[in-house]
Length: 484
Length: 95
Image (tube, rainbow over all chains, first blue to last red; front, side, top):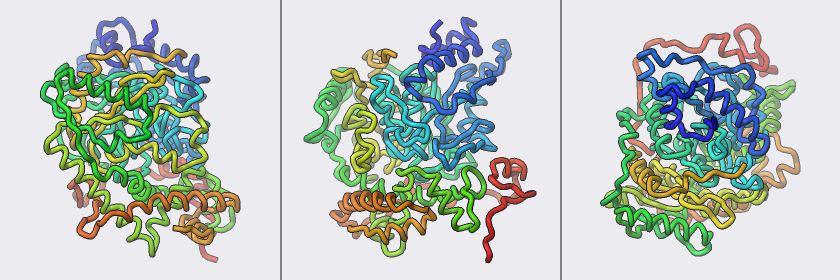
């Protein structure tokens, strides 16, 4: 049985009819990983999966009814704390770190009966990157073309789902790190509204931008996972006390009357012509299904990337100050404390991490704070206002997820700025705190997936699910699998 | 703006990161490029705009001042590079 090819929803169905068991699913998935991951490298520290088995679940117990993901394996990005399972952010500086607690999302997954897969997925170190090339374990390879990047920073999770090496996966998104790899790997990736999902246990990159979110094979699985991980958490004072709806109720096949805004700033001269054509076809498809669309303007689009690279790096410089060799991870051998800090961080951080910490520290430093950090905070207001204005008259905004399909490994690694610009369509959603999903809407002539991004106002994930699911029900893109 | 190697070295010291000479060279050039790009923000008139520090209207989240469970010393020290009793031992701070 090729159980690893199925969605979580299909597996739950088989489990309820006793056509399979959690042990069988786990074994089948583990075999798939053993057969395929030497090519894709979606996972890290696989040697630690030995001797770990899922708990046996008795389906006759009444408590099973309240366990919505019972028996389903979930693969976790290496920056989400899992008690007893190393969590290293794919960085040398956190080598060997074994968290003494579970992140809230992990706790919720366990309570839902899910099986935390005992190897973490690859990522750009500390989520700094858009290609998963900045991992101390080497890059993950795109399942659609092994010479290409899977996107980043949640490239491991996205590639695992794309390669059927995972059933459900979690990633994190600060500037597009769930959505862009989802687009590159032909899977569904959702960044929830800021505050929808607890960040407790997510090793922080930028505290005002980070969100944990699902990477899945289809929109239904995304809704299932969102039902479990969402909700207020007293351990995260930025999480919001708003009830979690049953997101599966939004999985209807109807978008009649939905008003879609198409921002003209996202369809510019010089964008990849195949991406443009494929996304325009997807928009036409949505119109044929009953949605209306009009051009709109997000006037400050061009300022989003510079704003992000000040605010996110400033927050990162603060959040990464804790990695100093004192309490965990790498410690350089020195005789003076200050040398210990400098050498530990000099040896333990990769180049991108150093770049971002230096940039952030500079932007916050005396004499530059007003010109850079404070200015960026004000432009953030303008970006948020652009979205607020549009959502008064429109239910959602639709754009390409990425200006290009997956690029080749090594293609952008010498030019940080070119890498940063690849986030241009995803970054604004984090700055504005709004939810956004990427779903597959076609393939280039070379067979690479192209992502369609749907954005909505804060806490309107239901609208996103409705539009995304309707599109999926009327297309076949999500059923195509890479040849591995 | 031009970013001198001295400025980058100063910022590296503030960040407590030791850089090799080649790193200092490469990073200075790269950061200069990024900062030039970021200078685009100066095109905007932000005189009447207030900064967004919280994207949600959620702040001053408090709880009752009662003691709650926290990590035991054992768990806290489990990853310590140099544990010493109930302490994290570090190189001498005071000369």
